[in-house]
Amino acid sequence: MKTGEGWEEVAFNNRDPVYLQVVRHFKEQIVTGRLAAGKVIPSRRELGALLKINPNTAQRAYKEMEERQLIVTEGNSPSRITVDENVLRAIRSELLGEAVEAFVASVRKIDVPVEELLELVKVKYSEQRSQSALPESGGNRDD
Amino acid sequence: MIEVNNIRKRYRLRKVLNGVSFTAEKGQITCLTGMNGAGKSTILKAIMGLTPLSGGHILIDGQPLNKLAYEKIAFIPDHLTMPLGMRLSEGLRFMDDFYANWDTGRADELMRFFRLESSDKIGNLSKGTAAKFNLVLGLAQNTDYVLMDEPFSGIDLFSRELISEVFSSHLIEDRGVLLTTHEIGDIEHLIDKAVIMDKGTIFRDFNCEEVRSEEGKSIVDIMREVYHA
Image: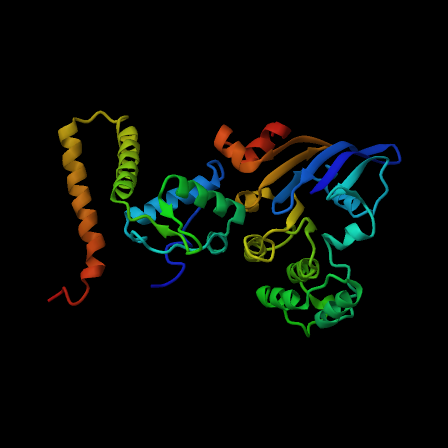
């Protein structure tokens, strides 16, 4: 596995606390499966360098994640992503909830019956899924 | 900690600093920002004892300015002050001769990091490359504090990114950095504390993450409020 994978693409906005943006990035990585349960994460110093943030901010993000039991640190060994199913499930539903909320907020301005909306979502979603699945299936699909 | 207490400075009748107080902590990056002529550089010069003050005082780790305090602080001015005829390698040796706290290993590391060629002549460096070499000269001193005057001014985007990287590396970690800049946008997410100046006084100094979480504002937002721009 490549180091630094998925780390370079983080773009920080200037209005939300950076440490919370870092926590959010971790949650996204966990939910998308790029950071598996139990996986060792970079040290505070490494994370600072990877994300090009102040080491104090990296420290604060890790403290926040420790308090929320997203990551666990035992003794002197490196921190890992939690293996606690409940925490992992909670992160997933939190991110899903937020995404749905944002979607609803932006679509509410348009007057549309829920059935029509759901159908649109269904079509679009399966379209996107099959698209993103293509490169992974690989090989000669043309024949 | 660098403590600046109610310092005043006048050039003839013009008040350049009019009662300025703030602190810069070790292990933190503090940014002095403000429009041109706000007095940012004068403060750095005052901390280094390069300009006499009309009032107030400055403490470094509780001690007034003295010879020993200067072994604790490195100053990176806004231009390179080395003789132009020297090669970079000679410049490094020059620093080694004059500074007890010079760290040769760290100097080599910084030269590699900025991809500088030690056989180049200082006088032939482009502005951006000269700025990088200037940073090498300051950061290779093993000091608790580093003062930087406008490290980003007139430097291209990619060099700015390279310089910003230094701030999140072990080359800076645990040291106290006090820098001035009027282009804060690039480094907003890197700094711990901002001190906003206008016309020789401090408008506001604050912890950046606190302002983001309590007010949802960026540093530039706060500056806009200050200058009513």
